[in-house]
Amino acid sequence: MRQVAKLRITWIKSDIGYAKDQKRTLKALGFHRLYQTVEHEDSPSIRGMVGKVGHLVKMEVIGDGAT
Image (cartoon, rainbow, N blue to C red; front, side, top):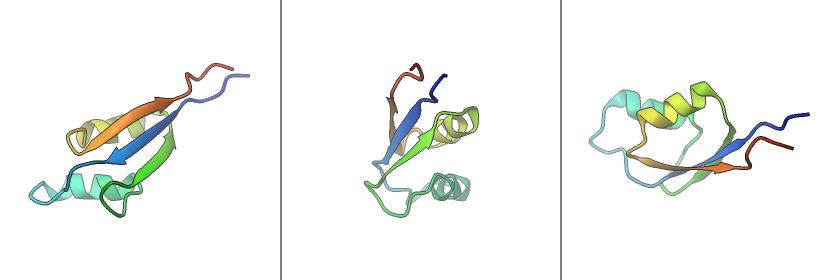
């Protein structure tokens, strides 16, 4: 059985001065405050959201997805 890799995403830069859609993307990822870390399963939709706010967050892959 194959295990899904997880992504650990940390909000590292303030969203002040950035577009509202980027602020909404941070909310959709589950962030509430600066320097908070959240974990999500690796998926194309999560990768797309991280790509949109990549200048505001740091992402690391946890596990390689193999058993």
